[in-house]
Image 1 (cartoon, rainbow, N blue to C red):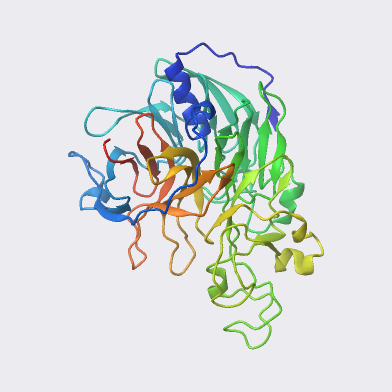
Image 2 (cartoon, rainbow, N blue to C red):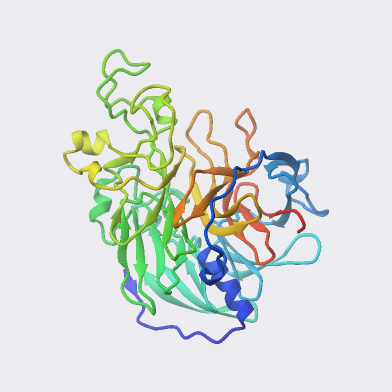
Amino acid sequence: MRLSTRRRGRAAVPVLALTLAMVAACGGTTVAEQPAPTAAAAPPELQRTRLEVPPGVTNDRFTGERFALIPPGWSMSLWADLDEARHAAWAPDGALLVSRPEGGEVVKLTPRESGLAEASVLLRDLRQPHGLAFDGTTLYVAESDEIRSYDYADGAATGGDIVVGDLPDAKDGQLGGAYAHALKSLALGPDRSLYFSIGSSGNITEEDRESEPEAASIMRIPPGGGAPEVFARGVRNGTAMAIAPDGALWTAVNGRDDIAYPYDREYPGSFASAQGEVLESYVADHPAEPVAKLTPGRDLGWPYCNPDPDVEPGVPGSPLDHTAPPFVADYETNEDGEVFDCGSIAPVEQSLGAHSAPLGMSFTTLPAPYGQGALVGVHGSWNRTPPRAPEVSFFPYANGELGAQQTLVGGFQGTDGKRWGRPVTAIPGPDGAVYITDDDAGAVYRLAPPGL
């Protein structure tokens, strides 16, 4: 990795601007503003509601009616018509910045009183920009091979100093495909530590744990700059990261594919022991995808251990419990647990269904009955039958922990598996609404509770 030794100065900004910057960086309201954690009540039954589309939209995805499942009394509207909208952050001046990896751009969306937001290109000619974070008026942008810092003022970003360089991406042959795991995400801690993700180079590539820099990890740059160090490892692709109200770093992780059945017993479709076989019915719900609180040195076990949500381990049709699923040895890399003791690492706090593909995460406080919680953009599966449906999930937050997954926004996928959208991330806005990016439909939606 190539490191910058230059330390960035930060200009004074108004209190409101600082508040918006902390919202963008931490994925929610500032730590000081958070009320005492309380458990959320039972979620309401979602209602099928038409997506409001302003006149003049040219995106053919929205020429017909689209319906979403949202809480009763809430509304959802198309706020920006933007191809390949991925991660987002609120700028100090109230603009929403959105990354477009394929286009190599960061786009600035300026709210307007009516209709769609006004779009303009803030940064161009970047290499797969993805994660965005603000520290005061300093904008951090994570490209696939480096992280840069910019001075943001008067609606423009200048500078572009390299904070970390020579990160692994597709150009190195380590990470293939247009996206694969080359995209990097960012989160800014309350002490101004900068965290970034490095995805795995493959499905179960053991050598990632010995690579330099270490792949399948979350890295931390100390406040003021310096050499990044591994903060957490065994994180296959922790592209969803956010800072909780208590300052803890959380991630939602994309798990492995085509897991081999790890138990020495029969399973439907096998004639004897199914151990080591890749069985479609088992793969559909295994492994669970971690939603974990990260602490210094935490190991999430990949590629040697997998979270198993089965209440009755290995039993076909077992009920699934996604709260604190225990780790089970991966048959292909860790048969009989000889390489890595999966029982020695703590279960992840929560998890998502296999192949959910979480891509973005933020913390916020929603109106009753929700309260404080984490929002996770579930992109949905590409290799599961039937497909895992895309949604925006809500995990209630209390006493430093997350409760079980709830659906806040659904309806993107029909019973036939066809989709009209795939959320990437959902972040709270300064106006009290939630803004949802969708790289499949090419959109940013505004989800508003009653009264907004």
